[in-house]
Image (cartoon, rainbow, N blue to C red; front, side, top):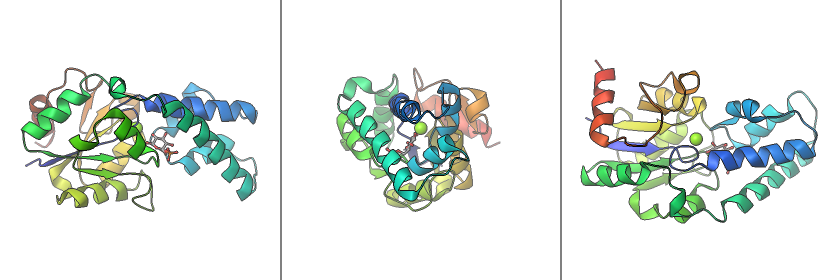
Length: 218
Ligand code: BG6
Ligand code: MG
């Protein structure tokens, strides 16, 4: 049976994926590195360092330069999340969290971001989840399964009892590697590897999601 749900944060519960993109775009423009919204698709769910490596490509930078660029991008991002409020929860997110609590299903955040905690607090859902796994929790980022396994452990659940909601290819891969059920949010091209693919959380009730996941397991 399914006993827990792990939510990715950026791009799943709130649209901070857009803020990550704008911050990288600003940095790339300043550094005159080629980058656009299309190229950003590969950065979804990917750690800060790995994202920068994808942007710089085969250009050579010193560790100090890389560090400075990561700090600069994070500064832009931190600036953008200052105004995040409960209004920024994506449609369907709050209803689903409430339904899960009603159904006795445990919930966790499983985000690669070191800014996940402040964002969760600004969204006003810190008390609605049972655990938060973030960019400080494990060493190996998504697509490694470590972050989701850590979240399951915090919930006291086995991986097979958990469903992961993800908007990123790297996140779906991590969920599958962890032996969990994966629900992908977004286009097939991006999250098609998930057991169940949905356009978004809007109008999505837990009973329907559960049914879809159970069908996928037959
Ligand atoms: C993920 C985002 O949640 O966190 C990525 O999808 C981001 O875009 C990653 O790079 C790391 O975030 P941060 O806040 O630690 O730089
Ligand atoms: Mg995401």
